Image 1 (tube, rainbow, N blue to C red):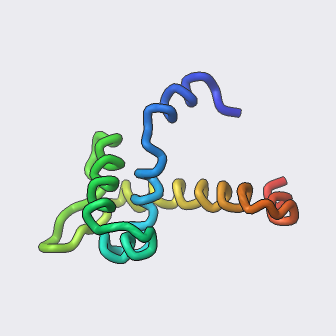
Image 2 (spheres, rainbow, N blue to C red):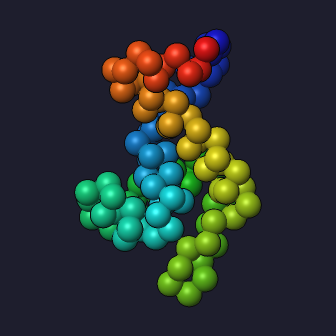
Amino acid sequence: MLEKHDFECIKNIDLNSALYFSAVMSYKTIFNASVVLNCSAPTVSIMLKRFCSYFPVPLFEREGRCLSPTKYAVELDKMIGETFLKFSVAMSNDPRKVTIFK
């Protein structure tokens, strides 16, 4: 169960930016994520920068024109990806799928 301080923390985060982060991690580039999310690459870049601003450590390292995720970003993506998957199933309106979490 979420506590009051959990709600306080979460309400100050742009959860859409977490979705953009997850897309970049899944599809490896800002451009590929923009195609999947049906938006421009600059939009993905802005949202990714916003998401990264929530953390005191870097989530990516630039290697030439490429962004490489740090170990922290990889672990963070595992947690966020699982959470988004559960949320997607819960919102699917298919009661048979929701029961897998019992």
